[in-house]
Image 1 (tube, rainbow, N blue to C red):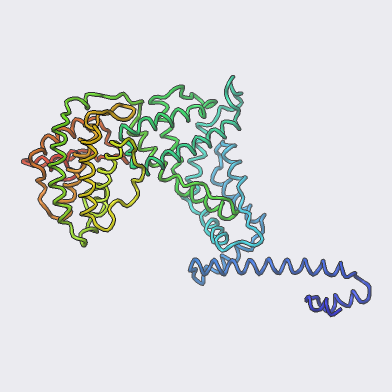
Image 2: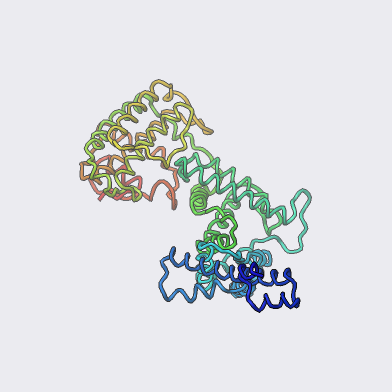
Length: 471
């Protein structure tokens, strides 16, 4: 019986085998079960200790973490059930309620430190009034806009389960398109964003079948309702709740929606109805004057860039909270993007580093390449994109951008703002013509126009027109 002893089986149990009161198999099974229980306890203790070490928890947090980790699956489920029932008390949203109750925080027998940490945070989060209020708002919205009770799908419509699958598919499409737009540097209030908005609305419309007063086609009603859905769903506390639940259970976390959701909501605000292009903004653009303006602006802005010292790169600028380095990177990007359009291969690397280690060379090289592309490709006499925008107008937009950002750079570095005096007035006029109908919406390209002081120069007035404070 030495083998039984070597396996850790106690003397009393060995005696029961010797006296034939138990078989070796029965004794082995009993002790294996006991070892399983000990192992689970040790694994849990190890996970708690690792979580404490990783989180840098204080001593007073240890009892709570240990107690939460030791709860049974039923006790954990009860915490979530009580939370959901309390948050949704009195709200008739059965589908939303059942979805919440179906997601239970089942810890595995051998949890990771991350899972212990997530469960500890989740248990604290469900006590927060902010989360309860957010869940209630979502439930009330679901009750108000959900499918009409007892109404069967009409001919050609999908059933509720099919509509839910369609909604998931459309949400993923919106996330992907929104992230692609951000990556490509597509401004939500740009005319180029309208086809994307139209695509998303068209994909979303079928998911509204079966609800009260569903929008029948793309228009202000449909776009307003979709915007309301996105704004209602933008609840950071709820997003965190689902992320923690997924971590606890070991399921993949849902994709983050903040970037795509912010862009799509801004695009819907900027395009509240299907776009009707005003082609008058394209009229009267002289390609020769545009090229002359580009040369004059890049000459003066290039001199500003050349004067930027390495220690200046971290300075703040008036533009969207950017540093000087970020501003310069964007200016180089403007040139590179226009070049790629001229070459019929629009870039999608807006978020990449276009400046490298030498900001002066990066800007100068992008200007030389742009001049070559604009003249060598015939861009100034061609049209581009679904709206057949004249290439000369696209280059003119670059001129406006570079002159406005040149003003930002001058203000950041203490240089004079009277740039390109030969073409500043006509560039301001071009900005008013191109962007006069552009919405000044939250998350858009331009803030509301600011008043320029009496006697302000053309570049200062351009900055004010595009939302900067020239004072």
